[in-house]
Amino acid sequence: MSAYDAVVLGSGGAGLMCALTAAKRGRKVAVLDHAAKPGGKLIISGGGRCNFTNREVGADNFVSANPHFAKSALSRFTPEDFIAMVEAHGIAYHERKHGQLFCDGSAQQIIDMFVSDCVRAGVDLLQKREILKAERLHDGYQVTTDRGVFTAKSLVVATGGLSFPKFGATPIGYDIAKQFGLKIVPRAPALDGFVFSDADRARLEGFSGIALDATMTTNGISFRENLLFTHAGFSGPVALQASLHWRPGDEVRIDFIPALSREELMEWFASRKGNRLEIKNQMAALVPKRLAERFCDLYLPEALDMGNYPKKELAAFCEKLQDWRFVPAGTVGYGKAEVTRGGVDTAELSSKTMEARKAPGLYFIGEVVDVTGWLGGFNYQWAWASGKAAGESL
Image (cartoon, rainbow, N blue to C red; front, side, top):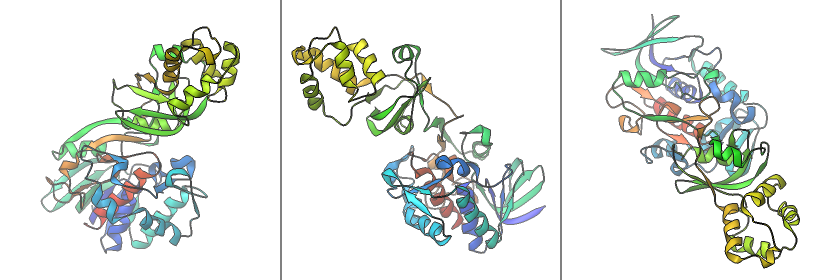
C-alpha cells in the first residue's frame, strides 16, 4: 500500500496540471491512469499540434447548467498564464483565427512540458493502472488498482468524458461521483457533426466533400465558420460549434451566403439575366456549383431572367439560400465527438476549489464536470484552470 497527500485519477491535461500545482506546494502526489502514456487526448488535439488555449476566453464561451461556475477558476488562471508556461519551455506557437493558439511543432511538446515538470516536482506518474475501486476512509480515500492500493488525504477525479472511446474513455469518473451521492447533468456527445434525416439526405445527396463559409444557428445561438458536407450530414467547425448548443428535436438554420445581406442578395439576383442553366452557372460565384444546381432544381421554378422574376418568388428563393432549415437525426456520436457535454453537476462543487461539498477531500476537474467549452482551445483552458484551482487547494 502506497500513501500520498493526493491521488489524481487521470493523466490528461487537467490531471497533470493539478498534480504539478500540488507537488510544487510540497504535496506528495501520485497520478494513476489506465493508459500506457500520459497526455490523453492532448496528443490528437488540433490535428496533432494541440490547440492549447484561446486568447479570448470568457465564461460566455462555455455551456453549463450554471453559466457562472467557471468564472472563478478561469479568472485565476488565464490564457496568458498558460502561454507563459509554454514560452518558459521554449515551445514555439502560432495564432490562427478567432484567437486560437497552436504549437508550431507537435502536441507532444505540451505533454513533455508537463511530464518533465511533474517529474522534477516529485510527482509519481503511474500509467497502466486500471482503477478498480475508490473508497472513503475515516481520514481520506483509498484507490484499488490492478497493480496495488493507494491511499491519500485527497482524491482528484480527472478522468475526462466519454468522447473518443478508442483512446480509452470510460465512465469511471461519473461512477465515482454517483457513488458519493453527487448529481450528474445528463451527458451527450458535443463538438461533433450533424447527421441528416432520410429526407434531408435525399435533398442533399451527392454533396459530400463540398465546403463553404456559412452561418449555422440553433437555439438562437449563431456561429460563422467553415461548413463541410459529409456523406452522413454536416461537419466542419461551424457544425461542431452548433452541436454544443443543439438538443434532439431542435431545428438548425443555415445561411449559405453570410457575406451578403438579404437585400444585397436580392439585388444580385435582380441584376442577373439568362436561362436556368445560365443562372446556375452565375450562382457559382456565391456557392459551390453543385449546391447552386441543386437549390435551383429544388426551389427555383422554370427561370425567366431573374430581373423579371416575381419579387415574392425571388424573395422565397433567397430565403432558402440564407435560412435553410433542417432537424438533424442526431449527431455523429462519442466516437468522433471532441467533448462530452454535461457531467458532474457544478452545484455539487466549490467553484473556487473544485471540491465536492458532500465529500470533503474529493475533487472533480476538467471534462468530467458540467462545463463544456466551444471549439478553439476553450476546453483546454478549462482543464488548466480547474486543475490549477484544485491543485492550489490540496
